[in-house]
Amino acid sequence: MDYQEKANSVADHLLNYSKDESGWKICKKTNEVVVYWRPSSEFSGNVYKGEAQISGCPQKVWQCLRPDPDGLRVKWDDNVKKFELLEEVSPDISVCRTVTPSAAMGIISPRDFVDVILVRRYEDGTVTSNATHVSHPACPPQPGYVRGFNHPCGCFCVPVLGQTDRTKLISFFQTDLGGLLPRSVVDSFFPSSMIDFYANLTKAVKALK
Image 1 (tube, rainbow, N blue to C red):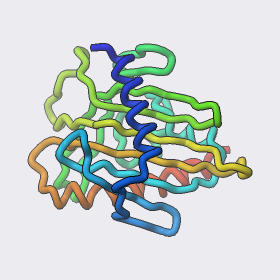
Image 2: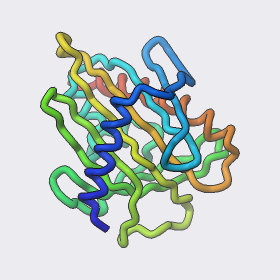
Image 3: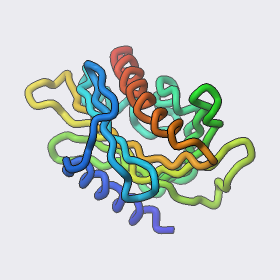
């Protein structure tokens, strides 16, 4: 598999998502975060978009989000139990395995995901992570985990003009959890999970010195 080509393609996909305002509907909202959804063109589920401003410069926010096996994500993100590097394709592209714990009071059993991830930087200071599912010879489906599939997903850390200590974070989640889950469980899980994601990230950024 050409991981580099796939990674660049998913980054282009997400850039298009970030620019396309059509069809998004609000499904959950707090004072800080808005979560939108629309039907996915990749699979039979939905694509979700989260938007919020985080108190902290883009470098700090990115430090918490960086896809790194030794990074901070597993410490603050309740939905990431384990994050493993399977292959470093280039300095900006890696193939990784993510393990998630059971969720929704045990209705959703532990999952694992294998993704190619590209870190892309833009001239305005925006840093993005861009991921989608791939197969890898070092990681076939494993007992004890349902193999899930991430369709184009990721995060945009965008500098806020004139406010160096704030970051606009746009996140896209588009996940086929696999298994025979009721649609209602999946549709309620993702928006709530994204609200928690932003709340936990905000705390993690605040805790950085």
